[in-house]
Length: 232
Ligand code: RET
Image (cartoon, rainbow, N blue to C red; front, top):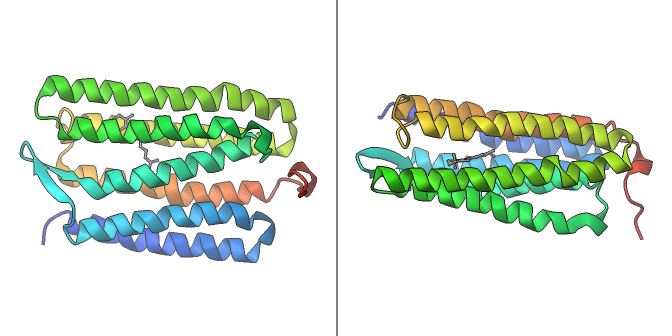
């Protein structure tokens, strides 16, 4: 049994329970159910990824360092879901501004895919080029969320605006740690070893998916009904 079996197994258990609990929370509060469905599916995807890694599926070695492919597959699906949930909050669920969603999702997916390219690169120069390119895509995501979407949210005001700002700040702070851990980890300068990397990413994943899911749901409950767009 390797040293990473425990954190990967814990990841599977926490993500499975997290998904179920967020789903059940939504069932008790029908007014936010559409929002909790977003957040329940995210740890469900992560549970699948942790299960795969626990069973050794997609765990491979590149340049002698362990690479977890399911992690990148997980992020390719979960990060767009989290960003769509946040962007819809910023747009106050008014679909006339929904054209912002696509560029945010595209930049985000490019961020993850080029991060994977960095992890797969077989020489240092290419590794840094892809890392830098991934950071550019990340900057694009943050720009769209902090500038145009926030301006729309500010203009509409109300409690939804407060929820957007709080969620945006939380998400930004937590997401910043991912490129830092990558940089210090086995795929970067190697100060953090494989086992510590798995534990750190586990902590970040639980905060970014489960804690954020509950926080967002509880904040959403504070938004008065008349701030949501009327059904046609
Ligand atoms: C990588 C490495 C290359 C540079 C950057 C990265 C950013 C990753 C991020 C991941 C967020 C994941 C989340 C998952 C949970 O649902 C790919 C590590 C910028 C921001 C939030």
